[in-house]
Image (cartoon, rainbow, N blue to C red; front, top):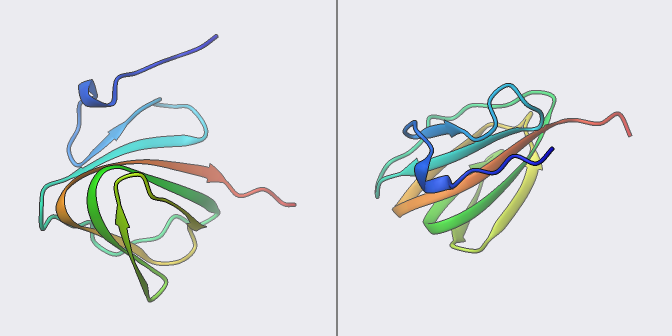
Length: 101
């Protein structure tokens, strides 16, 4: 079975669950220019963030990464993270359960 969604048609701001109740957890994050998500973590998760459009500063574990549309970042969810939009931005975030490998 294949499930598809149009990111632009998902409901929820700034977070919209793409595939509710399914793993890996997949979220569309939409931020207006200057908008931010408070520092937080996702224990026991590996995270991939793909910036679909815009520009963000991504704080991960005390480091700042400047991402522009088309950039992709992968990091450990145990670290404190906080994205802040430099300009209106949309990102697709996948939070996968950490494997024991």
